[in-house]
Every structure is written in C-alpha cells, then in structure tokens.
Length: 141
Image: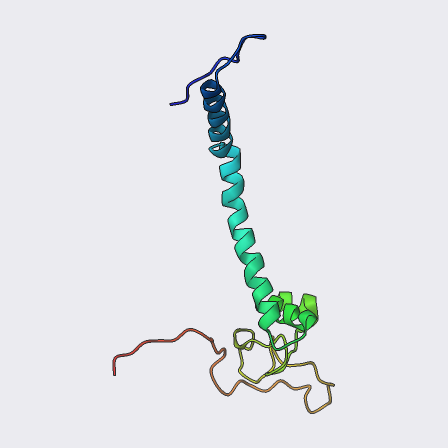
C-alpha cells in the first residue's frame, strides 16, 4: 500500500527523519516502477544472447567473420544462402548436419555442377527420400 506524502509547505522546516522517509519513498517508487520492471524483463534475454554470441566468437576455431557466418547458417538454408555459405562442405564454416538432408557432405543440397548431357537425365533415388538428423527413435534393447 503506497502512502501519498504531501510536499512540505514552502518555508516550512522538515526534520531529518522526514527527509529520509521522503527520499526512501521516492527511491522505492522508482525501483518498483512497472516501466522499469518491464524494461528489465525484456533486456534479460538480449543480454544473455549477447554474452552467448560473444563467448562463441571468442572460443570458435574460425576467424570472427567466418564464425558469425557459421552461427547464422545454423538457422537454415535460407540464412546460410544470405551469408554466402549455402553449399558449405563438411568441415568448413557454415556446414551443419541439420542442413544436409541427403548426407552427402554438402549443406543445403548438392553444390551446383556443370550440366552435361549425361547428367541431364535425373536418376531415381536409390534410398530413402530424406534423411532427418536429430530424429532419433528410442527402441528397447
């Protein structure tokens, strides 16, 4: 329950205890302000994400620009194409197993090759149509 304190009359003397109480109430009102609390709640994920990206960039085996490309490519093939690592090969920055559905070691599909007359006819798939990374099925032994 907040108690409303009237400001002192001009020229009226206040005691040190009264000044301390007023200052404490102003400080408490600022600390528990709904705007301040909402700002703190929204800034927490931003700070945590910034720290995580900073730690990743410092500990990555790649240079900073390539490490950032590698991190962005994790979001999917569209993001990988936007940062220029669409056809990353296994072991290169930008390659993630989740972006390699056919398991051939090239992220986001096969790298474009020169079309010849022999490769013009599509071959029928020999195995399962797609490979899903991370979709493990747990079976009792």
